[in-house]
Amino acid sequence: MIMKHVLFIFFTTLLFTGCSKDEDKEVELDFKPTTPTEIVGLWGRQDGAKYYYYKFNDETNGSYQLIDKAGSMDTYYKFTYTIGTTGDPYIMEYTLKDGTKKTIGIGMYKWGNLMLGSKEFSKLEK
Image (cartoon, rainbow, N blue to C red; front, side, top):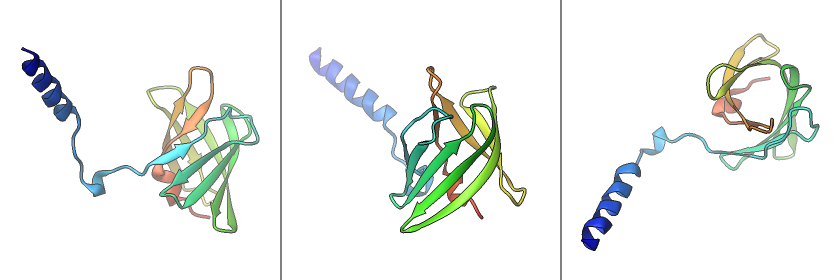
């Protein structure tokens, strides 16, 4: 009887742990959450090479600055954005200076902190 339980747990675990191809894997981002009005913003790491700093003006509408920390060079991006509250996760749309629009997912902690997670940031242009 114990062996049946062990086998059941083993096969159930195998069922829920799927293997995926490398090309199907999402880019992993590490983020430190912060409130939108903090100057410190939040840091993200993408592929262990690029570091981003997000500075929010306010919680819902306005602009924020993204600083691409790559080596000793800092590249600055300025965006306008809106946050929609429909659906889960929340959606943030932002517009680059050249008029290009991007959409990323945005998650909201219950105490109001924001955490961004999207590989769209790797596609930003000056």
